[in-house]
Image (cartoon, rainbow, N blue to C red):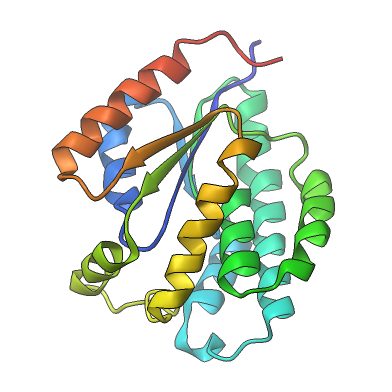
Length: 210
């Protein structure tokens, strides 16, 4: 059986990932959709904690380790079994989010090498066949995030400079991800969606990665 395709959506707050992934369900009805952090009972508990106001002021090392724990559990419980079964997996955030938020956003370059080393172990060879980066300017993204009906999470409430560093981190890491697609998420939703449809079709139609 051929291994399934692994597609990851990345982007700053308010980039439209969740909305666009929901639309993608109709295009890929047999795919497994999940999110990071989250996707498993343990992961969802970690997600609830790290996004909550109660985690305000959390030590940056603690925050990093919680995200790594959530990723390890998600891979073990959801991603690796689904890919091994030949299913397409679509994930809202993955390894790159940890890098740009916890290293760039938190201004902790000393975490970079540690993160790379640990990721090699916990990722279990799960490398995205495509990473789709929805590139939104922080001002636009934050305006969208704060216009949502649900209460903003802890990251939505970070200062503009934090989100600018996150975007810078994404742009710097383009060269490290060969299957990396950048989509201008400042554009209207329908135009962004058309670009995503084209990208997804090109990915799922390719032969499996070896």
